Length: 344
Image (cartoon, rainbow, N blue to C red; front, side, top):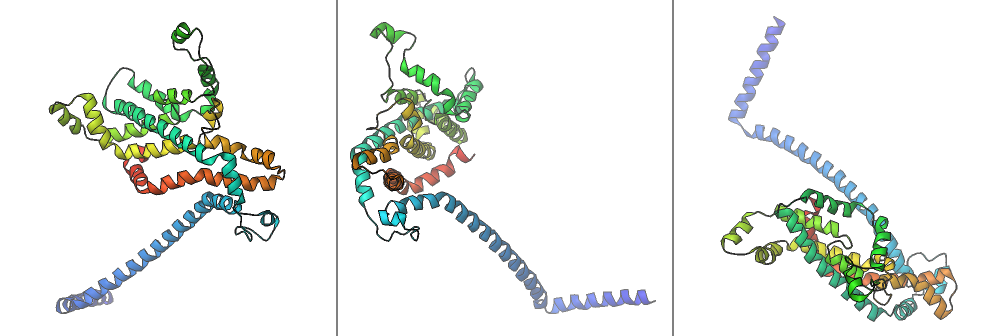
């Protein structure tokens, strides 16, 4: 009897609650508002925790990456007294520009930086042109041994360049194509000490990081609809016209990404520069490596701690053109990375 009475009371209470909701629906909405408020508070706490974690990670990464750069910039303004003052950490008490003046003269900065930028820009243009063409061919055409050849492209990305440095050195020390040059010139020319090895390798789409650039263009062209080319062919466009006037223009985001990567890596390259013995007057990255020794010999400075200050000033001068280029092209670079196949 007691159980039957309890069931009857529950049904009566539920019926009264339904009547109250029917008569006054605001009470029902108030209960929903309480639930929504609790869910909003929960979501807010989760968002705060995720945001805090994100900021901790960003600050940590920024400290690891940007911290040493800020230290180099700060030390480049140190005077001798600041360098030996244990109380000075990042902000010099007696800042000086003498380090930059000496580094500028020793590096022959104006002429060397211009030649380096021209050298890097020319290689960049060739690399974008050739790698985009190769990537387009892999993305759009079927031909014998396509998968095998693309595997070689992947191998170019994976294998360290140090493993092939000896064959490269021997190839360009006695550069002869099927014995033709020996037949014409009487002997195989030695291209070491010139920039020709880099231009030849870049023109053949096997230069510095070319495998990665081919992969980026291949991924981007595969994402473009084939109807674009079909419409061009219907209008009477040939293969080359379609590629240069239509497909390459649509590949602008990938081209911008590859251009900036190529320019930065060519500008900072020291491996191929030393391997092929390219002149110091052409590459700023190679000349800055001997800055401390040159300053010590010319200005009779033998303290390695003081020489490091001049080295820091030279590093800042080398970084400056790249920072300016990145600031100018920051928006295009980020959009290019997002829209190209580098994240796919």
